[in-house]
Length: 467
Image (cartoon, rainbow, N blue to C red; front, side, top):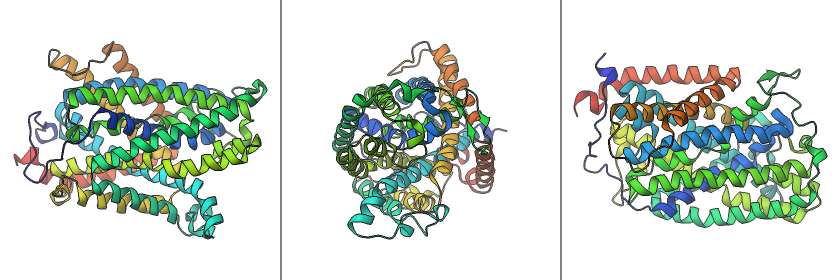
């Protein structure tokens, strides 16, 4: 059993040629967090959530946001205590051992790969009408086989473009993200400006047509406030991608906490205002399951110019979400390769300190997913991976509070023995609330991962072999 419990050392240093360049400060991290959080969740998933919960999707947002806020606080403590790249994977390796780290890392691979793919598909939903009007691209080349098309080429294009930018360097991509976040928030403010005057309380009735707990509807679709919360949970995460930037942050013990907590709570306020404006402006049945719900609402209230502007802005700014999660995905891949659990060759960096090989590898994986899979299935499976990672971080925080209570921490979670268990139980309940098909898919994913670990990772692990 010793190998299964092998823990990574806190003071372990990267080998030559495997160290990342420190180029980021807290404004870059806040921009990365806001860029990741405010994206497909409010621009697209509000339609999917409304289909499952009706106007009570407002409560779904609050529940998912509260659980995420508790998880964010535990992340902030662990990130400042263990300021190393890899996020939840690294924390689990240091605190719980190699097998737990593998499960969490494998879950993070699922989360980030599918989120990048989901946002790319969402971006394609906004870009498709513009591309069809401007250059006459056939719709069959802008939708995957699930939607009657051949392949989602716009989604593949944006993934390749973001990958190329990340290869250019973390600071350049973070600076561009900061600029695009300002543009994105301006467009959302414009939506609220036009939608709020059309607020009608009658549009919120009946408030909860499908009840609170997850239940199967007559059409075979699982609905309810918690079913919606489990899906739109992804509207709030993104702060975890900040934790993967620890090795590239100039002052990680201070800046990581500012980035994680600041972006999370700023976005919670933004989401609440936009959701109220959207649900009050038009009946939820008009935009439920729409790939561009906010633009659709603006057209419903006779604001076609604003709708077009929002669609164009989404096309321009949704890549900030792709960039943040793509960044997190490539860094988790990178650290797992550096630890020997994935092929060592993927952990080589360029002369500028950028992980080029792993970025290209990530482009290939997420590109295939985005080209062929539908949005709702991608999001549900991605949430399963995220919820496992969030649970692990909260458990790590509680273990370290017991194991080394006096160890230096750049940030301490307030009411740790209340916040920590809420994060654990909340994440597990949301995981249970996901569709049963998602549970099955997640089980298959982990069985495949366990097989890969036994055949390769366990034999090549740097910690286990003393390499």
